[in-house]
Structure formats: structure tokens, C-alpha cells
Image (cartoon, rainbow, N blue to C red; front, top):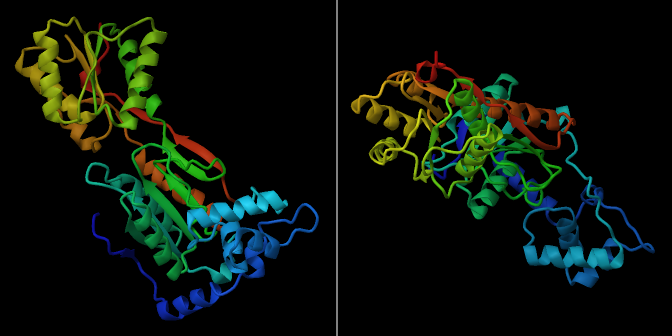
Length: 379
């Protein structure tokens, strides 16, 4: 999804030129509705006084206070500082108003932060299916985490009068909120949470992924559990590892041997497993931080004459499509990836917001264990 052109799903007819003219007219002066999220405090401080103190026009002051686009961060800070000094207070509880039924376009903007390493395809497919089932068309734009591309995408969405924006993707870290750029449209975040507490975000509990895998091995009677880690720079992998270590410590266990980490791949799984065997590490289970690593691990164990799961149990964590795990030899036990469910839930939360029932805070979607032959309990 590296093409900068928007992708359209069931695109409805629009009148782009008329809409652009309307938006240009809208930008000429602040409307009364623009001022609604703010209240005057102090001794009758007016918006004009705030604008004068900040050295900007009345229209720019209104846009800055209401988080509208096309205001530089420096100007926005100057206006906000002037408002605080004069006692012209913003309302932190301001939220986008529901979209009136007669004004709905039934278009949704899907802002994707995806790379070849993080395609987020399952989340996008889940979201699109949920939105389409509710009678909406989807415009997809991939910003790849670039702030300017995000602003361009939001301008495109505004030109098409979308009813709301779903932000999908990221590296698992929290991301900046779009409240200052999205022109008061409803926005929901999937896969990476917004840093703003009153936004609605739907994410995967990465620590629980690692914890679930470790607890399963322990429940199978394994006590000498080696860990083959993924990319140390990845926040997702770090949180999964922390969850695994917490589960081991709760059971009075420590990892068998040194925890080695590298970019997740079958090649790394093979190399790390050879190291465990060559160094004589005493293990009866191997926890691999993704399914690709686990598949490489299984191939080396098989070649070295180790029986799975009789001699050693192997579990993966579900970054790969599920058929990948099922077709391993033996079929791989894994903690499945809930990305498709995350996309569906985030889409429902956005539809709620469009109807005036906005959700706030971060929701986590539970992972699920897929038990297969690679981790059968000990007799």
C-alpha cells in the first residue's frame, strides 16, 4: 500500500469542485459554530482580545483555539498562551457533534500507517467489512506515519465530506492525536493508541500475548523454557517479552539460557535454535516471539532428531497468517493475532461516534490461544 493515490471502495458520486469552493468560503472567517467548544472566563474576555494579544487575526485565533487545521504549531501555542493569560478558557470536554442524518455522505476516511513490515491488512479488512455492512464506502489513504501525508489525507477526506476517520496502524507505540487536524470530525484509532486520553483507541494487549504463551507452556508441565526473541527495537516485541518474563517469574521460573533477539524470520529461528543446541542449554520448551521464528525453530529441531512435543514443546506468537502455523510440521501452537477483530471493533466505535455516542479511552482486544500438536501436555 505504498501508492500515494487514494483507494476507493464503493465510491459514491461527489461534487468535488463545489465542495472545495464551500471549504474556501468556510475558511474566510470564523463561524459561530467554530466558537462553541469555548467559554469566556475572567472579566468578559473576548476572542478579539485574545487575537490582539497573540498578534493574529480573529479567524486565526478561532481556528487555533478550536484545533482547526492550517495553523502552525507556533501560532497555536501563542494563541493558547494568550487565552490562558487573559482567562479565555477552552473546554477540554469538547467533542465532535453527531453527524446529522440528512448531512451524511456515508463515506469514511481510513488513514493507514502501514509499511511492508507492518501491513496491517487484517485490521483494514475487518474495518472495511464492518463499515461496508453498515452501508458506508471507504476511502483509504496510506500516510506511512508521515505527518505531512497525514494532513494531506485529512484534507482529501474533508473535500469528500467524510462522516468520520478511522486511523489504522503504527508500530504499537502511542501516536499523536489528530484532534488538532481533523476539523472536528469523529476519529477512532486502531492498533496504536492515541496519546490523548479522551480519544477512542482499540489495540492489542501485547504483554498479554507473551504472558498467555508462557502460561500455556507452564500448564503443559514445562519448566525449562528457552526464549527466542524478535526485534529488540520493536515496542511490540519488548512488551511481549515483558509479559512472558512476568508469567515465568510468577511461577518461580527463569528463562533457560540467554534470551537472544533479532529481526523475526525463519532464518533467525533456525540460527537461534542451533545456538541453543550447540551451547548445551537444558530446555524442555522454546517460546518464539512470532510464528516465523517458530517455524525455523521446528525445522532445526526436526533435523537434529528432537521430537516435538515429546522432548521439547514449541509455541509461536501470531504475527503470521494462521494457515502458516497450521501447516507447520508438527502444526504449531500459537497465540493468534486479533487484528481483524480490532478493525471491526474500531469501526463500530467510529459508527457510534458518528451517531453521537462517542467512546473514550483505550480498549484492548484479548488474544486467543490456538492449541495444536507442538505443545501437547506431558504424560
